[in-house]
Amino acid sequence: MASLLKVDALTGVTTAGSISVTGEGNSTTTNLQQGLAKAWVNYQQNTPAVRDSLNISGVTDTATGRYAVAYTNNMNNALYCVSCTSINFHNHIENASAANSEASMTTGDCDFMGQDSSNTNADSALTSISVLGDLA
Amino acid sequence: MTSQLNVDTIVDKAGSGGTNVKVANNAVAVAEGGAATTNVVQGLAKAWGHFEGGDTTLDDSLNTTSLLDHGSGDFKPNFGNNMASINYAGAFHATDTGIGSAVAGGYVTNGLRFYIRTSAFGLIDKDDTTYIVNGDLA
Image: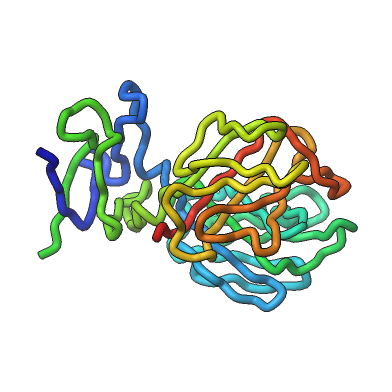
C-alpha cells in the first residue's frame, strides 16, 4: 500500500541543512539541498518586469544591457553557479573592473550583461537565469 | 499544526530507492547554512535533456517526451507534464562554440524552443547540447 507523509519542513538530523536522497540508480545518494535550484527568474529587460521567480527580491536595470539580480535569501559564498540565456543575445557575468573580477557575483546578487550580435550592450525581451549553490 | 520531520535519508517505502517518494508542493528544506529555508518543489529542475545536435534522439532526459528538430541549431524539447505558464526559466548550451539563444515565442507551456548559435550568430548543430528548465509545473 502506498504511504503518504505530510510534512511542512524537512530538516536533517545530523546536520539541519543536509538530507541525502537515494538516487535513481538505487546505489548512490545525492544531497537534497545542494541539488535544488536556489533561485531562478524569467525577466524582461527591454520593459523591465520580473515575470516569475524563486528567491528573487528584485532585478535592477542598471544600464542598457546591464542588470543586477538580487536574492531574498543570500547565498553562502560568492562561488556558486549561474546559467543565463536570452533571446538572440550573448550573456555574461559582468566584469566590475578592468581586471576580471568576481565583484559582480556576491552572496546577495549577481550582475549580468547582455550583448547583441555586434557585441553591443542591448536589452533583451526575455532572459532566463538559474542559480545553483549553497544558501547561507 | 506545523509538523517537522527530522531525517537523514529519504527512500521509498520498499526501501529500494528514492524514485517513488512524493513531496508536497509546499514542502521546504532547511538550507545548507541552517538558517533559511528553500522550497523543495520550486527548486527542482522540471525538465532537462542531453542530445547530439545532428539527430532527434534524446541521450537522457527528464520530463521530455520528444525532441523536434526545426533545422540546423533549432530545437524544441516537448514536455511530458506541461509548465504552469510560459514564465519559467530555461537555459541551454552546447559544446565548442555552441551558444544557447532563446527564441521569441519559444517559451510555451508544452515545450521550449531554442537556438544553438555560433559566435557569429549563425545556427549550428553541436554535440552535447543540453537544456535545463526551472519553474512551476501545471
